[in-house]
Amino acid sequence: MEALNDAIVALNDTFWLYLIIPVLAALSLYFTVRSRAVQVRMIPEMVRAMGGKAETAEDGGKAISSFQAFAISAAARIGTGNIAGVATAIALGGPGAVFWMWTMGLVVGAASFVESTLAQLYKVRDTAGYRGGPAYYMLHGLRARWMGVLFAVVITVTFGLVFSAVQANTIVDAIVTSAEATGMSSNGWVQPVLGLALVGLTALIIFGGVRRIAQVAELLVPFMAGLYMLLGLVVVVLNVDALPGVISQIFAHAFGFEAIAGGGIGAAIVQGVRRGMFSNEAGLGSAPNAGATASVSHPVKQGLVQTLGVYVDTLLVCSTTAFIVLLSNPTYGDSDRGASMTQEAMQANLGEWSLHLMTLVILLVAFTSVLGNYYYGESNVGFLTGNPAVLTGYKWGVLVVVFLGSVGSSDLVWNLADTTMGVMALVNLAAIAPLGAVALKLLRDYDDQRRQGLDPVFTRDRLPELTGIQCWPPRETTKADA
Image 1 (cartoon, rainbow, N blue to C red):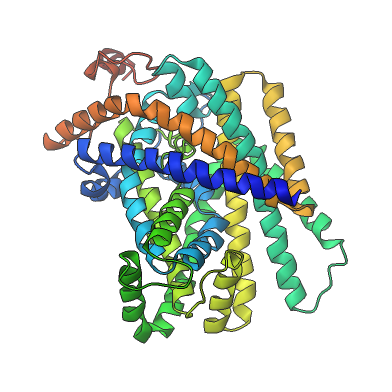
Image 2: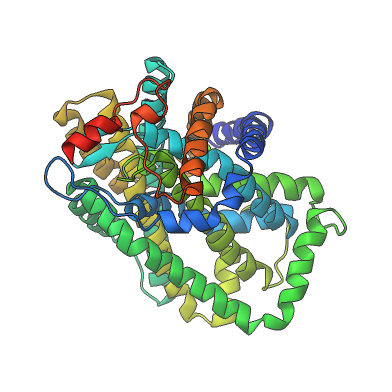
């Protein structure tokens, strides 16, 4: 089993390093140039667009708002990788990895904008509002249903099932570690009990539909991110004298002016770029599933809002971990010390009580990831079939893997999921490469309306050459309905 796991890790390293990351970086740079750096020049517009009000859905309830869609994607994005994964990148790549993580976050914002704008354009109606994502723009934009089916199956298995099990495993491990620190012995019974409790809480939310998921995410995401960043701020304040030196280290190591044991500029770039991509998920095709649910007046609005999510994840949450770790004078070169580096750094600065607060943080980020990942699967099950029994079966499948993840080991499963996630990313990148021109047309339409002092509104007849659009009725229908 260990040999199989090592082989899969080696395959993943090659697959991501020599194919996925270069393709994503090249596409992101292309979109950055063509959009005139939309991910930078329109940051104020991103904040403004998040405040939009949702319309009434077909079932009489409120559709998902722009902020709720943002919260669903942030729930999936902000996971244990932000805490353990960033520390691992620093352990292997040194302080310079943080600079390249920031750089990757800024560059791939353009790809995030394109994929989420496309998800909005090609979304479809359902009773609670809308659903969509890469599978939908592959079908309606590229007329390639086979590609959409492949993507839908892979993301449902990878995010909806496997990653839900991994996050459940993380929750239980964190709680058990915290309990044992107080002298409590698990004796093998704690994991199943915690697993059942986690299953019950998950069921309560996912059987309530996308609105309940959105409401929980809307409540928990700001709280968990704020709590973690507050802890990081306290650590920075306690070590403010060392902060200039840490910032200097980040830039010096990033460009090879200083070397670390077992690392160098190559290790810094590889670890920073890869961790940044894994963390913010830009270009992978996951976040657009949440972005498509939003009720907005123009597709570009949610493309901008979802791009802001990349910055929240990479520039705020991941940076919090980076400063917590770097301000503790860590040692480098050990790939197995990701999570422990963060925990040890927190304890060194705030005392042993912070271990239990970190457990709460991990519980929140991992549980909201379960909810976000579940919804990605739900949206794609809806693409594959309209049979309610299949969706119900998927929900029960998620509950089963949440329990199994709580009581089992996840190393091999996690590494297999890295492979399937790479396939998912490659399929999505193959779709947004030709469809990117459509997103850029929408951006020009948005910019034109803003220059006229208007709050941009998109209707199908504004770009009549576009086909496959299922929503966005023409202007005449809009007036008649009013």
